[in-house]
Image 1 (cartoon, rainbow, N blue to C red):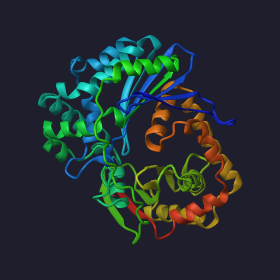
Image 2 (image 1 turned 30 degrees about the horizontal axis):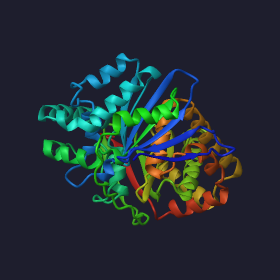
Image 3 (image 1 turned 135 degrees about the vertical axis):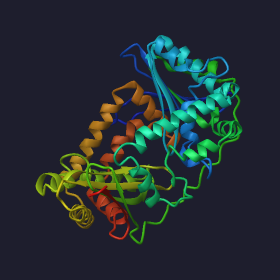
Image 4 (image 1 turned 135 degrees about the horizontal axis):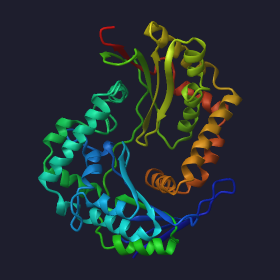
Length: 435
């Protein structure tokens, strides 16, 4: 039988969004958050599968399914999924990441049944419509995406190179989300069907319904369209043991058709969802996020040796995240000088920590972004799916700001010293061709 899950009571200081949960008999976790401010509803499905779940020789499958899922199912012709939703006034899309794949649409509340029926039909019957022709078509789409977004843009291969410097090749995070085109070329319909059958299960998914729909209706509609779909064996999670810090200062240099010489630094960081990650994330904001950051003020505004600079984290749940910083040299400035100044600022923030003013500013940046995102029902539905799938608690939507506010400067200092220690980095150097 289906079973209700506890309703999450919002904290007194949090946003206070209502969160109601229900689990169907087949394991599908359904989250409802009513908001009647406008006659629209967001439907969001998170599947607990991303590129970290792929096996050697089978990379790119998670991202491939982001495309294949729009190719039709038993009762929906190829290409009609998006067409039917757009005709109903919907915006619709999907994304893939290392840790998950999500599918989502926002539409007038009268279209809720259509959205749920379409999502359930492709979850339950995609393999009925999976042909070699459809697979080949989407393989070519992925190849074209790679050419446009990675191969033919300046620094388009930077993330691939940083991942290779940060993670072992056989690590779940050791390859890019888009994967290997050679692996995709070698994939058969049977290979792709096996991947779908292993991960596209109601008990491996979270359905969020946010907007102009009361919880009882949301749960009843979810039961109507998803309740008969069979569950399957729970997929085995990839190993998530934390990696040791980088050592030996690995370095890679390349020349490419780029507008400026550039230097990147990368580090292994704690897994996202930990207090240590929150602390170092705030520290990296102080270091390199926005025009008030240390890197921008030093390299771009004061010394005028870089045309741009930044530092950021890439939060991952599988034991180890990644952090990186970069700067692009101005014409006539030696890249070695730029690299050394970036490194000097990194070493200074590790040695001195952050000031209370810098920490307050970093928290304010986080809070502004948080409120801006959650103001939209589509982003709210996505956040509920994220926190339920990756951390098991959609209530974090309401308590996340409290977690960030609880981080003090001592915690930031300790996290920076542990994560950005001088011997714990790798370096990627880009030089302009024929420079």
